[in-house]
Length: 425
Image 1 (tube, rainbow, N blue to C red):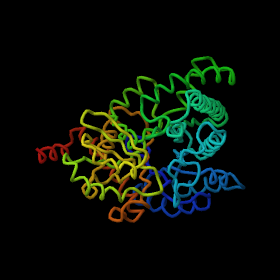
Image 2 (cartoon, helix red, strand yellow; image 1 turned 90 degrees about the vertical axis):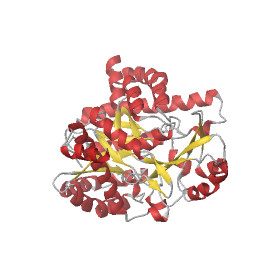
Image 3 (cartoon, rainbow, N blue to C red; image 1 turned 45 degrees about the horizontal axis):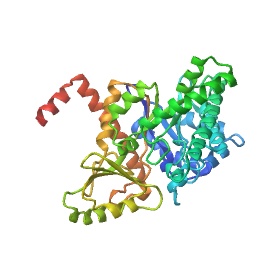
Image 4 (cartoon, one colour; image 1 turned 120 degrees about the vertical axis):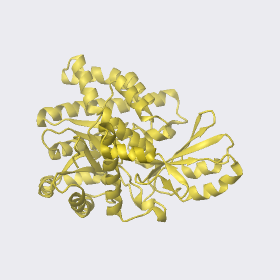
């Protein structure tokens, strides 16, 4: 939906099962028109479209893309962002580290992403830029036993493919007038996990490799090539993922801005947060509470902070639970996208405050207009947290709207805010 501040707010349709286009389209027809009627009856309603590789190929057959475009227009819907991270199956199977396959070392990942860009350019309304989130190059644990040369080859191959991607997006803009940016999404155990690694990657790989490639391939001057990279390769700031890195939003935004790296999309998501009791013998009950989140579909990395502020990372919650009695550990953050609209889960907490802080920062520094709720774990949540899916999506979006409204009222010093402040005091 289009908010008063000009932001486009939606949710990511990766929450709906379906790897082929017919299944995807059926989900869109089921959920989107009722949501629009409830949340945005007078304005167009945006979609954060997730297409698997198979669905993207299906959509380009016959007249399907034009039929879909016509359906969107008839329903008052539009697509402004896509999720190009999961290439293959994402539901009702063990995904785990396969979510990174194929990675950016492969031509398959490049071909898939270019295909998504061409689809988005066709669907994107005039005068609007579009974004597609993508994998953070590769999966770091695959390289734990690799030698230095192997690691360098992963960076080199990935960067060569991304340089080719930028060239394709420059040509696409010349042909269609549409600006499409690919938004690299750092996440735990990704080859790029945090702002420091992203900035280093731009400085040590992307610019040194990409600039000469674009100058030669497209005949661009150096500064034009640099602008092409910064325009077409941006960052997907997933709030859950940066909270897992224990990065404060304001600090991450400032570092990225200083490095000229743009945020193409913010994914509004919260991680599971657990304060560990001082008495390690009482942590057994806590382990039992957390064990219900250790499901078999997705990776649930755990990042532990100790009393000195040092971080220890575990590849999955099942493994981390074996270490819950470490005396020096004080907090766990778990890669499990829990609902935004509540901060308490049977004695556990979430990083919801990081989401609220990002929304406050947006009121001061409009780093992007693309906002996408990405709570995709409804199928695998513990029973007590499961709700009707339509109701859950609506509650997530309403929570975001309310937080933006509260921030706006606070900025304006509205009577409602002053009264609320007096009551709080």
